[in-house]
Image 1 (cartoon, rainbow, N blue to C red):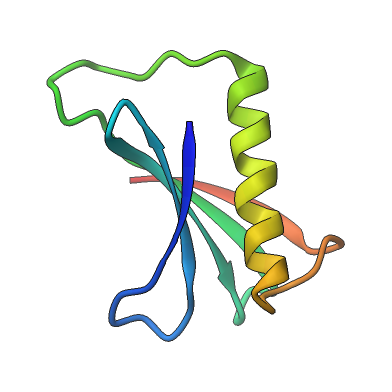
Image 2 (cartoon, rainbow, N blue to C red):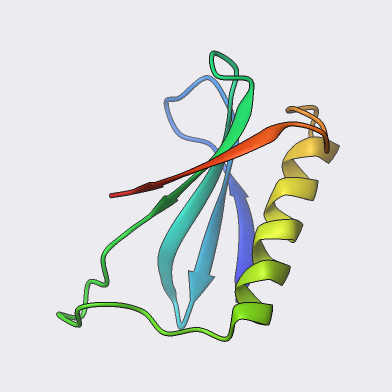
Length: 85
């Protein structure tokens, strides 16, 4: 899994999490909520779901969160929220 820091027309940076050249999730620090949020996307290849090793996902999420913290967003004590897209 790869973690990329990205920016579009939003005010904040976000971390995209990619697997097999497809972004399957993104992590954003939401100032209003004071929390990191995780959005998980549906697979684009027509499958119903992704299947990953839990350890790979944990590593990717930790890396994404740390890169956002290093860029000045949130801190390691912030709450996290998961949403499905």
